[in-house]
Image (cartoon, rainbow, N blue to C red):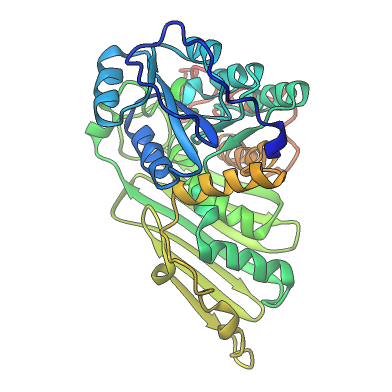
Amino acid sequence: MPRSTLRDHASAGHKGATNVMPNPAPAFRVAIVGAGSIARTHVDALAELAGRARLVAVAETDPTRAAEFSRRFPAPRVYGDAESLFANERLDLVHICTPPQSHAPLAVAAMRASVPALVEKPTALSLAEMNELADVQAETGTPVLTVFQHRYGAAAVRLRRLVHAGVLGRPLTATCETLWYRTDDYYDVPWRGRWEFEGGGPTMGHGIHQFDLLLSVLGPWSQVSAIAGRLSRPTDTEDVSMAVATFENGAMATVVNSVVSPRETSRLRFDFEHATVELDHLYGYSEKHWRFTPAPGHEHLADLWKADGGADIESGHLLQIQAVLDAFENGAEPGVSLDEARRTMEFAAATYASAFQGRPFSAGELTSDDPFTSSMNGGIVPWAPGKQATA
């Protein structure tokens, strides 16, 4: 969205708002829907961009949480729901930071209000919802973006640049591991670990960040063969999944997603013809978390890998939000676009479909009438024989 198309920032009425505090209009008017813990991460990032974007309003249905949030992070206006927010504010961007089951409906509401939405992962609970978002986006011309912040760390950007330039040679093999640990108490939150609220387990809610980064480097995937199980946690969903994937460029990769691993780590490894590139971190990375190993005879590539000399900022929301604002200003397509997010979501859906049906699934195979398009579990819970999942 070029700056010339941004809505006029002139003052408007704010019926239904509370906690009114007049402030000068910023370059970009931003609002947040949802006042939970992840919203605080967004606010912290926006504070770092105070000269370019400003939080002008928050919407939260829980009055207690709204009051607590507004005390810690003062916003000019606080609304009790997103509908009131969109009816009373002129916005350039809205951050959707609510539990997953509300992501798609709120994104649709934002598009109908002509407000670009930056949605926490997962963008939606199913491919069917992703298709609906695509239809509304095409109708309104207003984009829906997904928070996949690990794409934006300096080393990941550099790696994609080197891959696209072809200097590392063909990608051959890759591994992607999200080995995290969540206690049983973690699932006391009512919407966690339930298909109808989260769409899935660690495949959808935890590992998706790592395999999205994998896909951003390796490009379109071709086929997935997977297994999944509920090994330990008190969930309806899986707590472990494992997949083997092939890619259009011939590369092969393994992907593991777990919430039962006491020594937590997030690992990616890419083996190219001329180098191995590795990342070992947990919830965010900087240069120190990467390792570059050139193949014999290609030692000169190490010079290309060296940091660009810029600020070594940990991968996170700040870098992605900054990139979104840059795109708005330059008239470029902001990321992560709905098309790219759908490719990642389709990988998750194919992982479940393969695991639950016991066969490989190819990209594009999950058509509109497939049960795994309507819900990630396809109406099947293998570890609960005779009991159909809530779709």
